[in-house]
Length: 271
Image (cartoon, rainbow, N blue to C red; front, side):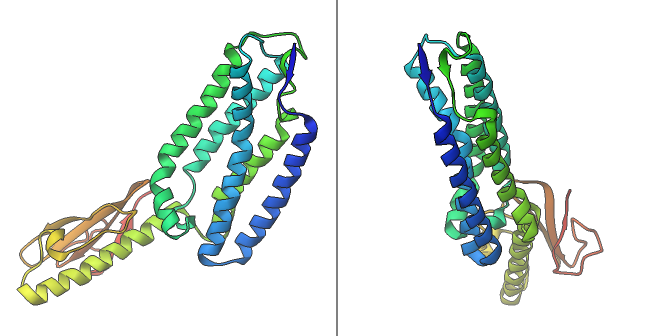
């Protein structure tokens, strides 16, 4: 018994749809500005991700529905490639720059991307595991002609995902490091302004963020305050940006850069 999962004709149509969508979205991302460009990139990334993940979903669905039928060698190879591509996609998901996420949707996605990346990697592992635990049959028998001859469409989708998460953001000057540093410095400048206002009102610096009614940006961690008699300093970090710390100080050395930063001017250090 042979079960054909997805024919070659369907994959040719899918490939050209991907090419057209890629050309349109990349053009929009290059031409548009602000949240419109970011939305175009996000739509393109979602489309590419769907192209990469879809073959694995189809394979697992048929493998579950036709238990005991076995798997053809060429299908096992294709499913393994699909699983590996899915795991790579999960890794690329973590590379999406914070600055490339649009508005409020970006705030939600920022927190969802790490667990989503883990789920995608785990799904890829499940695909590979299922392919290699099924009984091997003769070529052309069992589950055969499983999507993506030579993996061209999956690789195209993976390439698009890489372009969206790395190439286009780099071309537009977007990066996870740049986005994180920008947000951290902005929070510290706000903190400086609030501390100066508190000093003018009470004659001292506040030792707690609550006294200043300070609220950090949605993607930054709250600053750590160190207050002296006539001085204070603070450091903060950014979610998903490891090893990078920004600091600011007034009346004392900057905790990050020592004496190199001007009073009240944030400085950052990291890889």
